[in-house]
Amino acid sequence: MIHEVDEVLKGLLGGGALAGSGIEVSFDAPTRDWAARRNAPTINAYLYDLREDVKRRHQGIAPVRDDHDMVVKHRSPPRWFRLSYLVTAWTRRAEDEHRVLSALLATLLPREQLPSSELPGALGAVGLPVQLTVAGDHTESRSLAEIWSALGGELKPSIDLVVIVPFPGYPEYDAGPLVTEGMVVRARRVDEPEAAPDVRAHRPHQVATARQSRGAAT
View 1 (cartoon, rainbow, N blue to C red):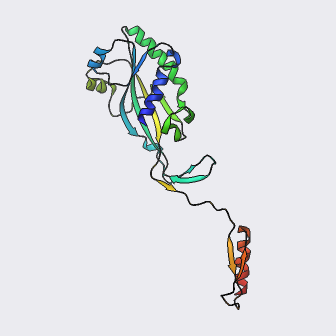
View 2 (tube, one colour):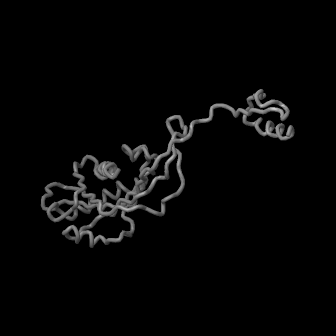
């Protein structure tokens, strides 16, 4: 599902305030070699960290419904993961990069929650929205300076973008068949032979009366 998050981000980053600009969106690591090969204005969204958001983990099972809102399966609740992207702008002049970053903020800030109807494939099938945290406090184990050092490049202004994504819970269990008929109770008098029972069908609300009658007979 990570590739589907990339697909969503590519549409967001290249759209909005930058729609029609023709700016390229890349997910490659922005290393020194990559920067040397770049020959056009580019937005880079580098996935540098992926971890579970354990505060959102829940126990138990959740129902899976079909198109008729009938429960057909049960499965564990979804697990939530934080995908952290380092978003940078690459142009020939620092002023242009700042303009691109400003346009990215204008595009992302109103879209901090993406409904499932706008999400592709398995990501949308989970039926839950995706949350975006834009330029929030950096709380991961590695600082941005350490990330740039590992990439072999110089520190560059960036937007820290965190996408909180639900992954479907596993395993799945088939639900039992639906109850379509009322309960059937077979009752007989104590002094009647067991081979000739009195068979009567009762609706669910009559079960208690039948049991009381049988108790009185004994």
